[in-house]
Length: 513
Image (cartoon, rainbow, N blue to C red; front, side, top):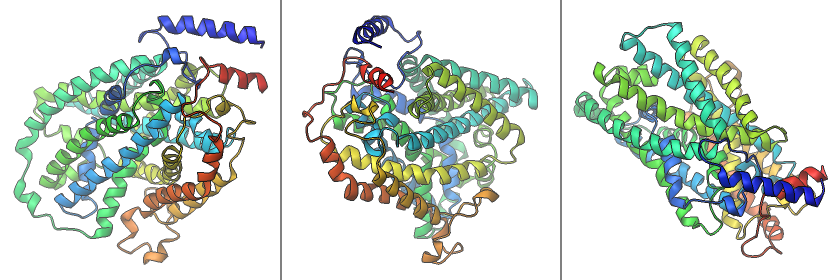
């Protein structure tokens, strides 16, 4: 492709983007967002992160937290800390989005190398697919339960219809892309916020403060286990997509504003929902047990029949909001490790796999929480290492990314960064050795280092130490061994790196290849 052809392509993209609206399919893939297309403020990040995290599903964590055999107030404190700290990581990583105006898994090429970043991109693809499937499953169960209670049907046929509706809507919004997602998230935030307040009022009569006060205190390892479980289930599950939604922000956007609005938007709903879930679960042990199989349906059982329709709306919309963001980011991750297809096609591939996963768990799995916990713990360890490494990169790096070199293996970021993989491998091996994972037979090999703290039967065994240790290894390892690499990468860059006016960097990379 000649320079003139590139310029022509740029003109066509500029013309197309000027008329693009929320009802047109986003054409941007993993390209750098051009200066003319950057928009919004840090405060605009509140809407997608709040909407994706106002899911009623969060209340189930109240019941699961009590499963660590700790008191109500211990669980409350650990849940709040786990939510805020984990989403603080999301906020910090979001800074990278506006510094490079590219997806998260493209920006991590500065840490792992342009070719080497395919590995974390593949891990991210698996993680986001798992989260999308998990959220879609819960939405299907919520819709099917509500239909049965309202007398609209029951059994397999209702679940099939629910699957078609839920997955279908996720696919449509995911295919259309960023602008429609941002608009939908604003609407979802308002609708679900109002209906959730109504649920709080209606469910208040089921709270038994005397029963709550009788729950005894638990041990420190149990408290830490609760905290780490929450971190893995919330913020650490989002770190690998954080920059995908800040990449459209102008370069002049405030770093502190990005961190605050992301952390606040993602945390505030979860804090209140988990707290309310704790109140309900601590008041009713049977309810706490039932959420293991169908968390949304179990909580819906305490509502009056006339509120099931609005409750179903808030449950399904909240869960779908998170699934839509995962669908979008999953497509970007797929493109990031070399699959050369349009972004919309990548979203469709994700949708097909999601459908298969939903069908398997909904119709063939005996329980919900078992496979879910196994997935979170296993994938959470390497993603925690990556999160620590990328967080250090963002904090240490003082200048914008050289976006052109993010697409060039021969550029300043190189093709492979051996030190980065050494840190990732060490953190993952140590992390897996310090977690107990009995959710499935094929996961029981983990925990091989727990003999250091008394073995798999010790009080520390259920603390999920591996996740937090993996995160710390990533943070410290990257700071020690990659700080000089970062300084070298940005030594000849201006304080604010001027990016190419369109996706010329990605196009130039394609020419070279």
